[in-house]
Image (tube, rainbow, N blue to C red; front, side, top):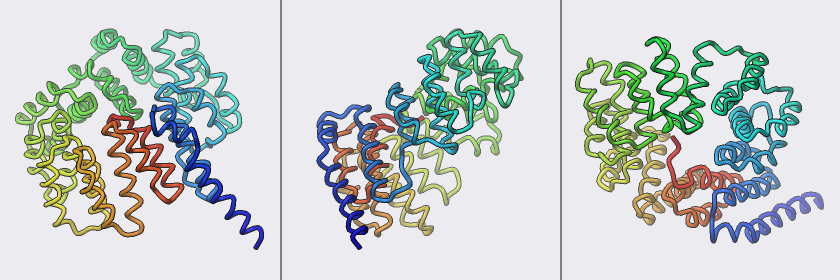
Length: 391
């Protein structure tokens, strides 16, 4: 009994200290991405003390690495394991960029891994920086040997990451059509997977208006919020075969919504499967921040019977409502949820404020979440979506 009381006492002491942590208070008053990430780490430690095992520490490493906060990412190396694939890859990518891979070596050794397990993360960085001896050594040590197309893709991606798009375009133009198509697929897919698809905008004109290349252009248009590309894709839809148009229409609609052409975006999704219309409308509402689309999505929600689908649509609506300044309406959806739905919907309010660039409100909302584990994830989301959409 004394042990139980001791554990309970430690838990409540941790919660009290977290709520009054001077660093958290200071960050909430003047939030920056690095201090929000550090707050997420502290929230995760509190959640761990309360018995939570689902913590966002790997995602903190991922976010910190992408944002250039390598010291913070490295300080969390002991929290990573063999299942932390994306966290390790992003850490290696950031460390390679700053020529600090030696500092990641102890983590890799502990997990029985090596740089050779992650050539796809490190290779484009070596290529971007012209570190040919290191690149050759990496290829030699790679567990899975990269193909000739993959090596060319690393070089193209490296030029894009280094801010030399004209060189990337020049390299692609020198390839035969079939190889260029494959290399572009590898480049755009890798950039999209680590939230950098907008970097591929300069090479989008080299993609065709057919099949997966067309769909990749839609991905780039949405990520870069490029009006000219989004509207060109819409024009190209008219010349497609019906079956090709049907499969590509959704991506074009979302790209158009991102650049503010919500009316055309709605037209396009209304031509697709009726049972998926409510979800698509809710996402267009979120992308475009248009109140009229919010009303359309809300009306369409009435016809959705599947509970999980309905929950997903409501989450989109909550974020859209926050993004359009309708906080009370968003809060009503939270209050209407059951004990399982409410915490998740509270997290959507946090995410909405984060996407809107209102980090102070986002942190206040995050710290109001009762469950320590969910609170930690909510704080992490403020840093992850720091005023921008994930690409």
